[in-house]
Length: 58
Image 1 (cartoon, helix red, strand yellow):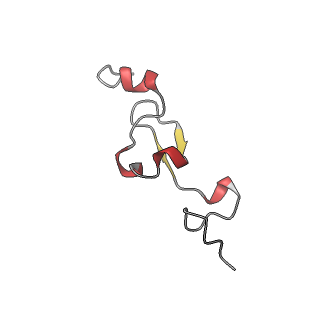
Image 2: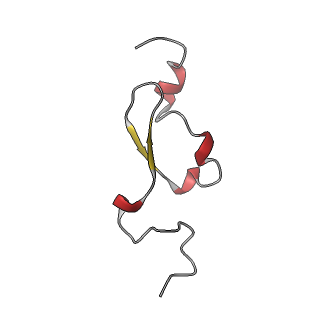
């Protein structure tokens, strides 16, 4: 029976089921976080350091 309190569809308590995408600067895989729930489509950087380096080539 699905948990009505679970806000992430498909999440079964295992992080392997969470969506992920690469950071546009370093390429590191970012796994979905609850803090990013409202703007997951706009999340592009894995950290403040990558956000600061966004204009410099790596």
